[in-house]
Length: 260
Image (cartoon, rainbow, N blue to C red; front, side, top):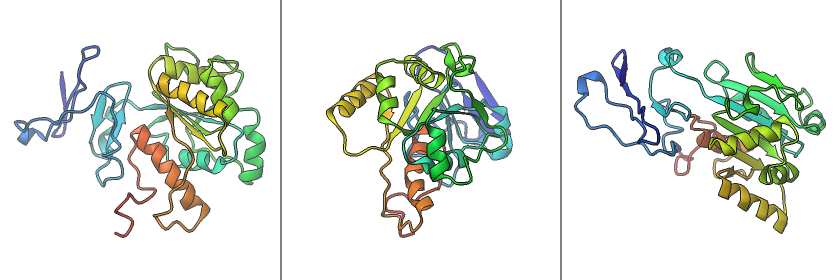
C-alpha cells in the first residue's frame, strides 16, 4: 500500500514480521530503487543531518517529509521517567527537545525525584504545553498495560535501585510497570544511569537488562565539542538519547564535525 503527499511517496509494510517499508524518491524519480531499511529502525546515522528524519517504531515508518506535512503521520508515544539520581538537568534538556506538537510526551517521577529536582533545578521542572504527567501510583496510565505500550521509554536519570527493580520485574508502581511493559512488548527502553563506581550487582543487573532488550546509555558526556557550560555538557548526553529514539537533533557536534 502506498501514499503520496505532494510528491513524497511512502511505502508501508503490512505483513507481520516482514521487512520494513522504505521511503521512495519523489514521484518523478519513482523508478529509482528504494534503499533497504533495517528492521531495528536504527536511524542514528540519519540523525543530526540537515534533513529532518524521523523513525516511528510502532508504525514501521521512516519518514523524510517537510514539517508542514507531519500532521499526516502518527506521533511517537514517548514516556520520560525521572528518578532520584543526581542529573535532573539531563531530564530537563531531554524534555526541552521533545516537541509535544510532534510527539505524544508523558512524564512520571519517582518519589525521590522531586527532592533532587528541588536541589538541582531551583526553578523546578519545566514542561511544555501538551506534556502529560501521571501519578506514580496510578495504574490507570495508558502505558501501564501491554495493550497500550509506549513506543519508547527513557528513564533519565536512572538510579541503581530503579535499574535493579526493572531488571527483576518488581513492578510496584506505574514507572516500574511501564518499564516492564516496554520490555515485554519489545519496545525501546533506554536507561540513563549516573553512578560510579559500579558494583558487581549493578553490572549483573545491566547484563539482565541488555539481554532483555534494553539500551543502557550511561550519562557520560563528551568533551571534544568544546562545551563551556553545564548545559552544553549535558546536551552531549541528551543528543545520544535523541539519537537512539530516532529523533533528529543538532544539540552537539558529531565526531569529525567539531571543527566545522
